[in-house]
Length: 291
Image 1 (cartoon, rainbow, N blue to C red):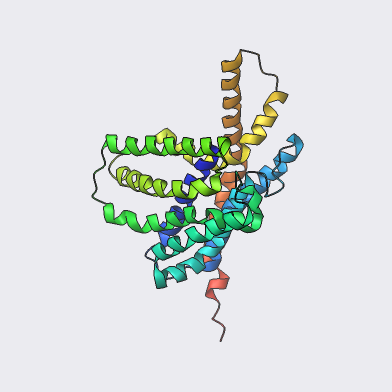
Image 2 (cartoon, rainbow, N blue to C red; image 1 turned 120 degrees about the vertical axis):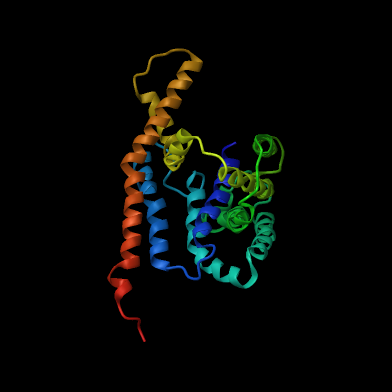
């Protein structure tokens, strides 16, 4: 269930963006924006360039995986404004207001949409906004549970429940008129409570190192998996039967993703950090303020 997985990513993204700033009084706008835009943009440009020779649709924001990245850019850009609103009313009010706005957009624009692409660049981010905003709310809730003990049974119960609900949403999307825009914002509410348990458990147990390592290049997997899938038939691979051929393809996709990470995403990280530090401490910071 790929699209529900994107929704989990949205919640995690909102959490990761707000968590470092949850107690900060101010946000340096240029360092923040430069880091976020370069972090997402450098690998994105690389993926778009690589997609063309293989006929993969990464050139348009509609009907491609790039709808979620455009939504991310919108959220990054709106976050400084949302912080100001949050100081007045709190995240709960912002999240609460986002749900009716999202469902109103679905009802008025495309009530029978199966996915987010029919809402286009101008509205797809709004339809999914409650998911990202729930991540911001989560960032302010986890500190209150520093001493909470999480059992293996509890954490796996949540994981299985989320997996099951993602499957239900997928069945509804493919076999009923109820598409993802109606179900996945509600799914994100469950994801919110699940990730709250995950964070509490993370504080008291060591993560699996190889999964942590794989997580560092998961964005590259998202960008490259379709391109690598299209490229695989062009390589000379032995015919080993259906199951082993599938394993060959998966190995090729993951290897391609990691190579892409080394060539594009990792340098993008470096460029984002370097630019952000320069803007935070460089000549622009040292200039006298304008009258």
